[in-house]
Length: 385
Image (cartoon, rainbow, N blue to C red; front, top):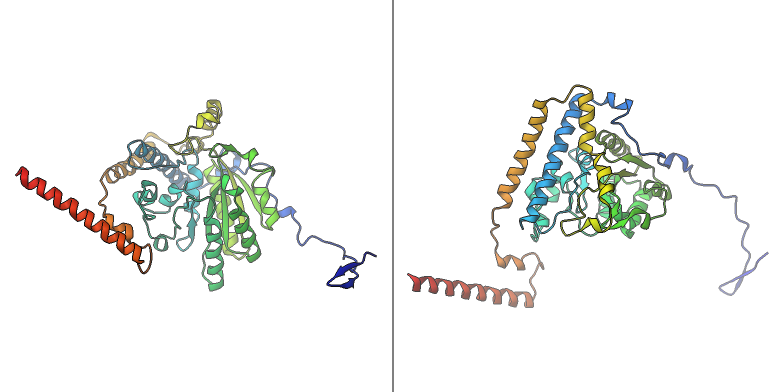
């Protein structure tokens, strides 16, 4: 027997007991293929009215993305991370939540926030370059859009765990991209969520690239959904362009969390048709043929194929959806083209609860400079008169 010295004393370790896994990992494993509904026999069971509503939502979502992208070209937005091609994930994420639930979006998930009811211009405030998020998270139950990768995930777990301790009927849905799963925050969030059995759902939109880095250079796992097993939670794999499938899978995970059975990790296989942002040149790392292939699996086209097959899509219905989308875009243009009323003195608000001497000095200096500029302008206007 091996004898080890422990604190100067002989230590004789006991033989290890027979090891047994704490649970069967089988039920936690995702399916081999992404779950699909549209284009399969299961599509017939999708409610017709729901399908038509989803179609309108997707059309509006696509137009929202197009208009926001155009606003960046016009200088009205500093940057815009488009979800063109990913609208099914965004729309489904908003639809599965009850009023009391919380959404924790990444920087790319403005459409999910708008679909949940947030004012479109408010959702774009941060991307416009303003100093605040543009909306009240507590009122909207939408956490601030998160630019750092994956840092919103531990926040979602914390809120969900606190809600459970208080006995509140609240589920948190935390959205993240495939690149965010390479961050330490992702690991910490999933580990704590599983240990605490927190009512939270992790929704990964795998759109193929973390900016320009393909998934195979980020992880060697069979899928991102397989990572769930290592934390002790179920993993689900879904076709992220099939809005009916995403809605079903997310809805099941939300109800599982609400009923006290803990977290779920869902990976939605989708594709970012646009560049990472307006500052990105996607042609440097992917081919036109690849993009064209994914355009053939467009989430709007999948819904329209099902609607057409069931005789639910006519010219009048299509026109109504288009008009609703154009109304949204027109409102965005009108309000975003209005110049914001800015007060430079707001720079010093909310920096410290009690301003420091240096901050007070800088504030006084700026006030004097602004007053001098105002006096100079008034004098010049007086001379011209």
